[in-house]
Length: 420
Image (tube, one colour):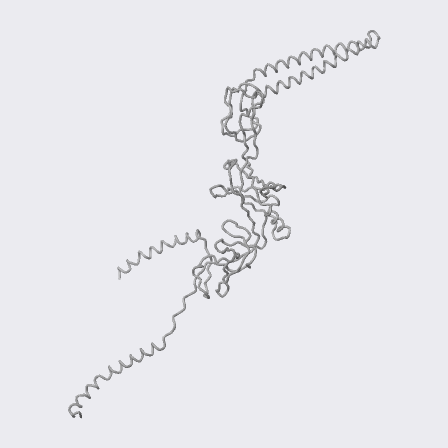
């Protein structure tokens, strides 16, 4: 239907008025279409941070931990060497005593009487000697003048010598009686700590046998006896002979540390005294003994302990935290971070444990970075960002120190918002 001139005159102002709005709408649709067609891929996430340690080489002591038992360095049984009634105990049980200190007193009356009798016999023998010597001296000029027979003079000389022998016997009897009298006072044979008294006052001791009265133990220093497998000893000696290991500082006196039952390490180091030359046929073990100072009496005889023995040192070895090493039936491995941030698995050879670290003998080089934590962040083919590893104890302090500023900032946030 043809439009009338009147209608056309009405439509022209309408389109002329709406033309800018239509152009703006079409331009918006065009730009939106262009944005959908040229969308960029999402940005890659940053590399994950992992804790690493840098490998350093040097001489590392090879420490072996073995079970052992403490023993007093000297033990003496106090026994009654004189028979009689025990009258007094002159020490405090469990105290420290000195060598020569009187511990017990036994009835000494019979021994005092025997000593007096021996002295009297000696005096009689000395009197007989004086008489015989005077007689022989008078006979000597007479026999030279043939006033008496030579037989009489010989008898006088023999009587003098017999009297001299009687004097010697008398002196020995006096000495014996004095020794027996001294046995009535029982003294400490060594210095050390004495235990409880095994007899009480009024008991008859030393009758037919040397009755044991007490025990003294010298606990400074202490001995610790322990055993080591003969095969391990032979391997260690072969490694030292080949030059792989070298002897620990101090030569044969290897360093020894004592670990108590609660897991704490005794503060004073010991030294290895000897290793037995004979292998036990039933266990295949070699007995070793070490000496440990014990001035405060903290260590007690009979106590079971762990002995950490450093017999040799590995040259060009290194140590790693135990959590950095993965141990399996196929071998021991670590994760090494390269210069490009790539992580690779590396087999290593472990020597022994030293505290909470492993001694690494082979498989790593100086300067390489080994992962210690952050294993859960690894992605196949992804790179990582190595940062120096801090032990849990060392990281706790900075974290605690940083909590205060964090708390301050968090408390300041509501205030700032309120100010707004």
